[in-house]
Length: 131
Image (tube, rainbow, N blue to C red):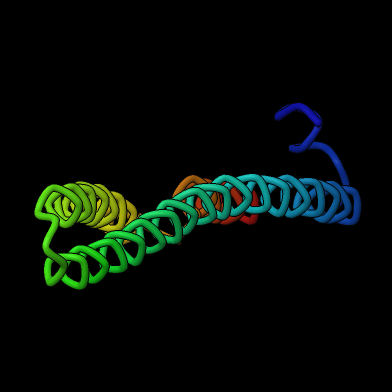
């Protein structure tokens, strides 16, 4: 409905148009919020996977370290040294993955920011339409 039509339209038609527009707007906002939350959920899942893999590597590293210590008691030095080095490398890699995932999760803002911005703009629009 154009501005000229609005100025000559009956109040009932104006309210009907406002209700229809508000309904369309609400559906679009719901779709936007859904899309934003899907993207955020994917990010959380990806970072949770990093934490899981990193934790598994840290665990494997500690197992290797313990095996290295146990083997160190044996008379063959090269065997425990290789297990010890492997344990350190795996533990450091696992720790790095866990820290990367935790850091990404700490920086993730769960609020659907674009939806909030458009809702604010829509509120301003609705107030202007009522005037």
